[in-house]
Image (tube, rainbow, N blue to C red; front, side):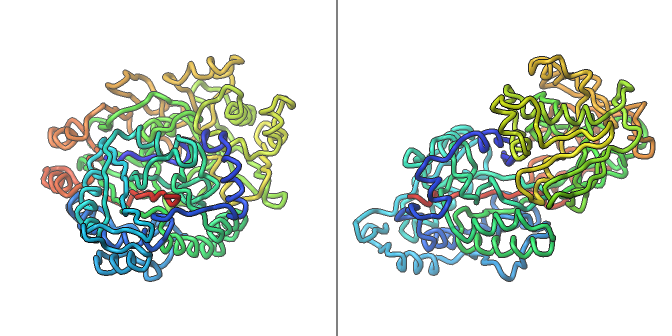
Length: 556
């Protein structure tokens, strides 16, 4: 399975580390930005795309174009902000176009079959390829063969996933970033705002996602404009223009959008999975024939069962079953009220939340705005090292609180036990996504220290429809229906969910034996056919909310 990073996985690094003076100046106006002689020229980047048969890669890696699609723009095709595909260049495989673009860019073919510029520099590219997953190896190997045909000398440097991150992202911006390309996967949220992501120049920092060093004034204008516009139709137009621009400029190329599919035992009904469907919300609608424990197989958990610390997708599944958030993402990809209704005021800077009546934690204590406030101030705690810091940093008064010159965050105001407001420094429709994290009970988690707060990670207590009742690291997790869940109309119907650690290669056999009720194996045609051949098991599939990508170092 493709390993993916999310924006929030390293949000702490994105927020805490500063751009160097040179690149900060470039971000402000682009005046000192110097694109490199090779990949700084968009014609070279476009040529490399034309010379990479991504459709054939999909067939080689996944076995079918029904499982993955050639990538066009850095948004999900399921998003309301995705442009009309007719306006996007698919860069269909064409070696003649690729060669013509390189000629136009001043890279001429030498007698040895490789290209050189007027200075005699050979067009040599170094590609960082992690071997933890097979697809980067497949893609780079195909590129080696086809790029050689247009005169590109490709050097493939194989390593592990974390080493790629270390070189491409964690190294300070500048010449120390020794690569021309790298490949990885990126997960998206329902919010199309690309701030802090692969294409945002402000994220060209040590630890930031934008490893390309790419700067485009119009791109930065559109990113900021999208964050300041609240009418969805107007935002859609902004992001469609931005996506089309990135499709033309390709500082980072979207290799493919990948589908997801699950094998599901026919005894399971109501498992309505989709691109934006949150697994815990889906579980509420599940019914079972026979044994009332749903059996799921997954690869691993980190054991960070804490809503403001969980970063791995599987840990977040558990967290969202045990805890409940003020805001949730609907199956249509929209941010809607969770355990609180909300309204926007104060020139769109202030969100006022009103908790629904009767919400209780699983120990019977009521959930109040004191718990809401406590959860968010723990994100701003001086010892906090989790991935949610950006959630608090945008609030008024955060800077003073973090500096120790204020005892509270002025942007958070408890109105009464059910109403609380959060005021941001800047108005942005993207601010709503900062409230999708579960609320923890202050009376259980607060002993005055961060150490005490984290002590509950393996034994979480929340207000959600399920309880974590047993957990053995690297072995299993047992979730049981919360018998005292505060909202009986949306309570889980089954008795529980038993999750065992199962390697990818063993999931299909476990489905066939009946050891699992549902599982998601690696997405390829062989696994799909194997599941379809199992009697009593069906397939449910949808397009994933993310993509695999190839990043060009535009300063080279």
